Image 1: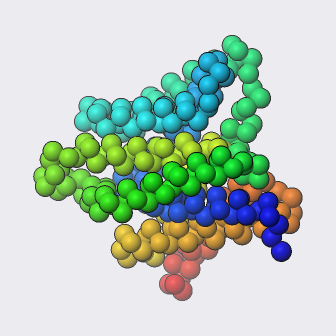
Image 2 (image 1 turned 180 degrees about the horizontal axis):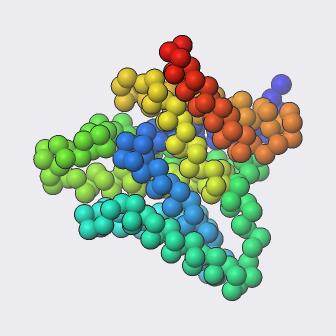
Length: 262
């Protein structure tokens, strides 16, 4: 029987699954799975800045995520996306580690890297819920544009030449904010896997974009709930178990697909 303290955790897992299931496929279609890695790693610099200036780390994480989105949109015609991401990633990690070393601050790094969903508070739950609900609303309004833009940018540019940058900025900003907020519960090292792996599994079986979103959400939530139960039973950290369960599902799905069982 689930205890009352587990209800907020399950709520967070549900909303994170919805957000990751909606946004994950866009990272795959745009071939930008590294995008979430870069935002996650930039959290090291965000925490360093937050500690130095005594401000909320979430504010600095979101600010850096928005900055990366703007840089990507306005410089992707000058440099390839992977070049921009690598430069931003290297700069933010190097600067963040240097600042933390200078100011002798390392207490927040463990929580930042690995997260701990078992100790989230009410504010974290409400923040994640707000971001995911906002994401879902924006997706319902502009999701068809995002899909068209992600799958065939050239044709989309011809038909919507004046709004390409606007929709790109909107999509990358929503993804960036979701990642930045999810780091609170999932940690830097694992938030990328939560976004990318369910979409990768769904890609094996989905015939339409709508199916891919649905499968991604279901796979993410099933993996999260199963991992939560396993972590309680065997006294393990929840987030790494979520990723391991997803990896197992991915391997099994590929085997079944190879032998044409499913």
